[in-house]
Length: 282
Image (tube, rainbow, N blue to C red; front, side, top):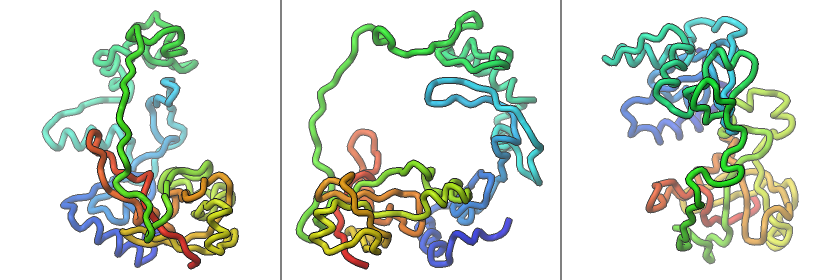
């Protein structure tokens, strides 16, 4: 695999420094993404059109995937890679096909017990589907909660680990935009998507922009206690006063250089959705 032109030398150097504490990084993917360039081992995987199997979407619908073309080079289906690794590490996985894996899922997972390859030939089925006579569950909790009564818990509000102050007066929150997917290493390979959403933006309220003398489309610098990034401004009422929004799809404006890695006390989830920043003309 050749070097990915999307990742510049400074970006690569910074990422390598951040990964120095890792003993081994293994990436299994269909492209040599920015992350794969940092890996000690890259396992080439087959894409969706190059493998058999099933997938379950967020509607709980299980559907068949059918191979359309052969996978190129040394790439293999994900289940093959995992099975071969497991076998080499001492736990034998001698599956002959994805259908054998599904049969094991039928035996071990009650909500999938009735979802067989034969039943998936013409249409998908939604779990729970406890047996082969069951039609699948179109709605969950349609007339009542599955446990009977609802179970509600009151929780106390906990202040974020970092709040605005005189030095960093804005709250920054991060998230997705419609046209890109996560870090953009895959979706940015599509010319059509890139035309619709070619770059990261700093969404800022008109009142805040006026106070900072920032014009729409102007390059701005966003700084937190951990670092700085630059991107174009987008003046919009969608952002409330005192709050800016940035998406996390573009390495050119790597927003997680700004976010606060503080963990919540229960789930240990990083506090990426809120941190204190300042905004200024670049």
